[in-house]
Amino acid sequence: MERTFERRVFPLTDIQVRAANDDERRLHFTGRAVVYDQLSEDLGGWQEVIRPGAATRTLAGTPDVRFLINHDPNLLLARTRSGTLTLSEDSDGVLVDADMADVSYARDAAVSLERGDLSQMSFGFWVVSDSWSGNLHEVREFDFDGGDVSVVTYPAYTQTSAELRAMAKRHLAAETGYPLQRAKHRLNELELLSQL
Image (cartoon, rainbow, N blue to C red; front, top):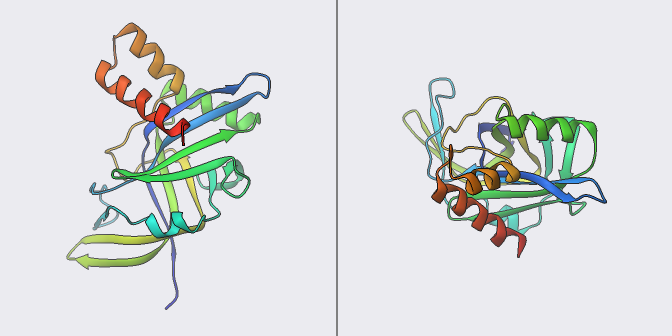
């Protein structure tokens, strides 16, 4: 059976961008590329849900995944093969952790993320195991190898959100405009990721 490459676009969750090392002039990005057990937007007369564990097998096989802007291969931010991109799975989906090089489009993306103009994410994948129930597509397993995770303009899953790491810290310190518990939770998750 021939497999078809697919992309799903949705708002980012748990995203942060911060200076990883001022001497090396890199930006550090963390976010959530895939959300589990969340209903997508209408994708043209049908909706989709990604089930927990859908990425377990592919992530165990150390796939070669690229981190892009709007799925454009000319705007490469990081890559698993080079060690600048790490993908991990938790009960809520797939987390992204990347060190972006000091290139103009990475700095531009960081500005757009900080402003909140760029606040969504997508992933490109191959469905391995799925089923349909009426207009609901249920994905039980997918393959990431050769695919991508991307920060994008338009979402398919609205349950996620995005902000810069520096932005979350400012809101946490000021305790205004951003729920304090949400900021603390996100910063704790980021600290746990950095210990892996």
